[in-house]
Image (cartoon, rainbow, N blue to C red; front, side):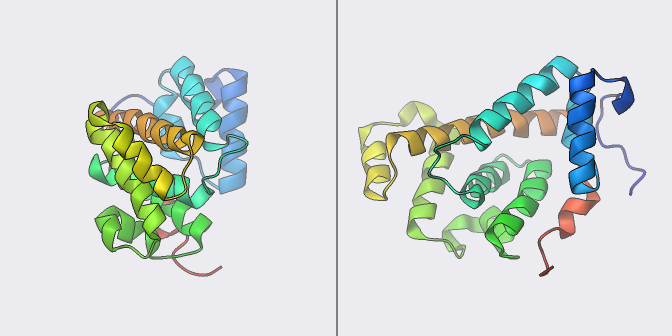
Length: 193
């Protein structure tokens, strides 16, 4: 554990939070063995923390999504790298390594996903995510046709767009608050268990 600040904003005591948030955070701590700093940082505004994680769960745990957990994390890592968000690259890079069972994948995607050991379909998915992130106003039917050619349907495309947009918010808030990645994330998923 480090003595360095995890946010430029005050961090409330978890036990002083509303019961539902306290329960959520302590549940995460029990499962992970630590509390990810995103929970602590966003707890500065409890109503926003609640809304943030409700939407997070709605898009990341949606029943019927054709995207794998690893592919969702690929989107987060690629767009977060493009947005220069250290917290999200490190935290979601850890999740990507775990879900993909591949210790190099997150570093490859954060560095240059076009050179990563992923499929052409996944590269097209990340191309589209970066288009949503950087130039959504230019998206046209040709972009949808390209996605269809790689086997994505309209619901998959919505998922890619929603994940990209949501984590664009997350990236910006992490940078605004100077959110520090937990030390634990750096080593997660790097070696076989």
